[in-house]
Length: 488
Image (cartoon, rainbow, N blue to C red; front, side):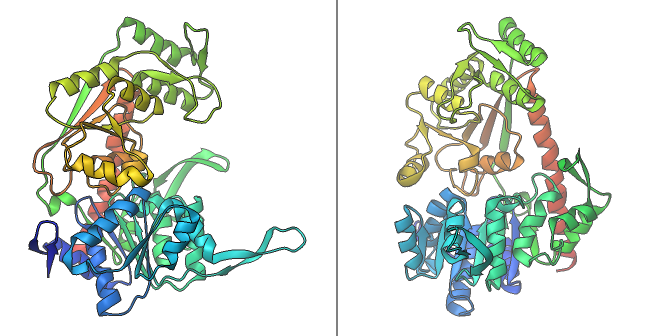
């Protein structure tokens, strides 16, 4: 099978792994593609949808649920890019409520919506009766969603069984006839196998991992907690392999390094050292749960978890006051410039290159903008595509983003090859997905990811934890892949 890139005017034969993934979707009306980044999940799924809509006539309306920026940019661009699917009629459900309603009414085969608007969409079709006496909803849920195929791009966004988005989509699938379902993700289990139940429930209605999360936990996990509050889940001996075997018939797992020769990834940990005064301030906060500022204000850590967060802030160079304000209005105090100085030195060292800067705390964003006035923040809304294209054209010297809002699906490999994390993240999914914005097919040179870390601080603990989580997910992906091969 061949596919034509309309932008480049070139025709390519599908790679063997792409053909295998497409065949997996054809054979399984409910299927998961646990394919790591750059293995073409989007275009494979679009080829499948095109066949099912136009060749097989098996599907009439498809709903694609994706991270907001991916829904706005990646899916429309992929449809326009490839000749074999370019006449697939689609509608992006975005904008105001009136604009979203109009998009839902458009004559199309594929409707694409960001995950933040999913609850709104479901509410358009499913609800409860309204009591004449109280004016409140009551009784059973009525209605159904008008789609016979659901594609969940980055299904890991639905891994929390207690989240509103999961519960609403679960209810919608229970109330509706949706025979075709596709899950796409490269990071299915960043917190271990506990992440899998909710994702699989949306695909097979609980057939493989159990109809309730309680049954799943009782069967496969040991828990640690205090009463009803559970702190951690660890799989029982041998349970990880059993879980992988149970889902291997409908989940195809592939790891990028097995199929694509990727550019070399260089992780450059720049370990910085506090001077005597800054080390004393950090140690005082760690020891006393308290730190004073010359202005007379202070910061107090109320719990051990709060202390860890504030210690990470101090390592980043600033810390928030103890005020319960909106995140954009909170007052912060700069306590050192160690990482900002290191970032400036790095940018000066490679002054001919463009940089992708990843921040964790909002005060980092504000301090980066103050230090580098030419820096551009990846925006939301109407300007997103403009900034996205400017970066990939090489017109932006420094692009700043947060991994929670830009960690999935965006192709940023053409604008530069250097990424800097001003603070580390506990979240493995954020780490893997954000690094993959540059480490993608099409990148022609070595990719450099610089992490600014302060020696002797919680920065080092966070780095160690991310490495441990990566090994856990790697095990799951490999076991499923081995079972895929064994059973064809």
